[in-house]
Each structure stands twice: as C-alpha cells, then as structure tokens.
Image 1 (tube, rainbow, N blue to C red):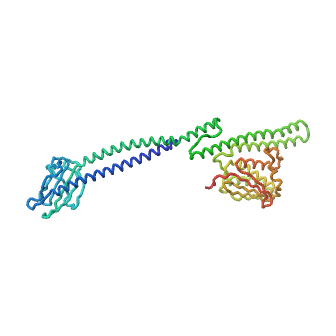
Image 2 (tube, rainbow, N blue to C red):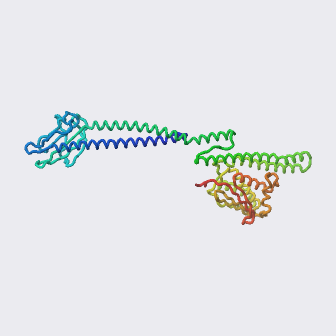
Image 3 (cartoon, rainbow, N blue to C red):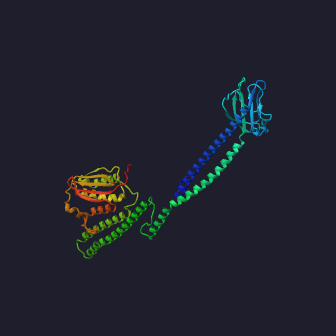
Length: 450
C-alpha cells in the first residue's frame, strides 16, 4: 500500500487518527465511569431500603417475623412494579412484598450473607433485577433470617444508554471541530512552503535572482542554502563562459601556425603540424574537462569510492611503466569516498601519479587520509624533484592557462583547476623519498563502509 505523497494529507491523517483514538478512549472511559456511578447509586438506594426493611421487622416466638409498619416505598405495594422485597426465615413462612404478588425471589440460603451482598438475577417478569440481601439473627430466634430487596435495572440501562448517546454526539462534534482545527493549523503551518515554492518558480523562470521574503526559523536555513546554491550555479555558469572564451582564444595561435605552415612547402611541415595538432588536442581536452567539471562539480549525492579508483589507476600505471620496474605503494583509502565524479577523480589523481611515475627512480608512494571532512592525498616519488622557485611555474601563469609551456606542467594545471572547482586544492613540496610531493585536498563523502 503506497503512502500518501502529500505532506498536508499525512499530517491531517496522523492528527485525525490520533484524535479519533483519543476521543474513542475518552468515550469508553466516561461511559464506564458513568455506569459505575449509576450502579453505586442504585446499590446505595437498595441498601437504604434494605435497612428500612430490617428496622421495620419484629420477631415473636409465636408468630415469627412480622413488619411493624409499611415501608416508605409505595412501589412495593404495586403488583409487578419492578421493586420487591422478601423475608425468608430458615424455618417458617416466606414473607413477600405485594409487588411480587404470587412469586418469590430465588435465593441461595446455603451461602451465608452476614454483610449486605449484591448480585444480578432474573425477576418475576424475566427482567434483570439487582438484588441486595443480608442475614439477620433476632435475639429470640433460633436461626437467621434472610432479608432481600430487589429492583429491575431497566431504568439504569436507559440512563446509561442516554448518557452514551449524548457522549457519542458530543465527542463526535468535538472530533469534527478538532479535525477542522488541525486542517487549518496544518495549512497555516505549511503556508511558508507554498511561498517558497512560488519563489523557486520565480527564480526558475528568471523573474528573480534570489529567494526573497521572511520565513520561519525552521525553513530559513533551507532558504539560505538554496540561495547559496543559486549563487554557486551562477558562478559556475560564468566560469563556463570564461572557459569557452579561453578555448576559442587558445585555438587561434595553433590554427594560425597550421595555416602558415601549410602555406609554405617546407620539409619540416609535417613535424610542425604534428606538434601544433598535439597542442590543440591537449588544450581542447583541458577546457572540455573544465567545462564538464564546472557543470557537474557540485551535484548532490555524487560519490566515488577511493579504493576502487586508486586500485584501477595503480594497475594501469604499473602496466605502462613495467619496463622501468616502478613500484607503486598505496596506503589508506579503503573506507573513504570522494564527493564528486569518478572521471574527475581519475583525471586529478591520474595526472599526479603519472607525473610521479615519469620522474621516479623506483618508488611512487600514495597516502590517502581524511582530515576535517576533506580527503588528503599525498603522491610522492624518489625522483630528482623540483626547486622551490619552479613549483609555482609548473602550474602556468595568470587566468589563461594557454600561456603555459607545452609539456611542462599542463597536467598539474588541470589538477589545480578541477580541484578548485570542487573546493579543494593542490600544493607541491619536497618528499621524504627525495623527489616531489604533491598534496591534493578534495571534499570527502561519507565512509563507503559505514
């Protein structure tokens, strides 16, 4: 069974079901308490009549038990009125009220009743009656005498039925009122979300640049995050436009060279064309990578298991550099994930590992840790390394990377550009192995093994 997708419907159903359950429970509790109160009141009345009957009774050895005067309840004198009394001696004639006419109450004299005892029984007209009885021993009597007073319970049942009906109507109306209040409350409480939806529609349609308006404290952080996301998307778009312009500008020089070389029939034409085509290819690849990363760099939920990607890169590079017997050692990263695209991760770490393998003598060491929500990747080699003054130069100069010298640091420029789009970065230093150490920081996702 599918759950309702409407948040309003869910809240109303939850509140309605709980309200109905609570009201039904209250209704049963009130009915039970009222029934108990009616029965206790009825028993108290019967007990008063029983005491009056006992007080009115006298005992004489010759004539036995007799009443000294009539009781105060006139319905005892009306035949089958529903109110009865009966005096049953252990020995002698049973005395009954006029209301019993020619019937007697069925009693179990084998069970003693030294104190008032109540129970339900069947009366003369097959009606349910409530009986209260007690054994009394007169001073001169040889045995106890059972006094009993009984009355039909029809009136009690009618009172309980009327009360239950009133309670059901009252609680039903209360439930409808509460449900209406819940509907109003939910719709009023969710009104800011509808306002947020309208603002998002305005932003999507281009009518507004940011979400505007005042929101409750629970929604305000979400609005702030959405505004930051919108601002980020605008920045990404601006970067993408800049990269396209850079790409167009970067293609001018190689194309011009190709045109000049093709115009002159010289023996070096083939070599020049090949070299320039290679430059064009690398520049195009570079800017395409930047454009793709700018569009997908902050996609929510994207993650890349580090150990899988590093293992694949290690296996590939060991095959490429098998003739030089380069040993690639990887430490850490088993339960870590990169919060981004697999292709971008391979591009960045692959460039660093490939560069280390090119210059290493025998060992490339990759260490992967997590610090303060960031992946920290150390790529070291035992090669010659580079001087402090040359480390910044390998990234190229300025905002336009096409000015970088071909073949000397374009891969590191790509790493810095992509990591920067993900909010990370790269630094270069000297490795304890003697060569270059590249430290790459990237945003980390949750542990892949968690």
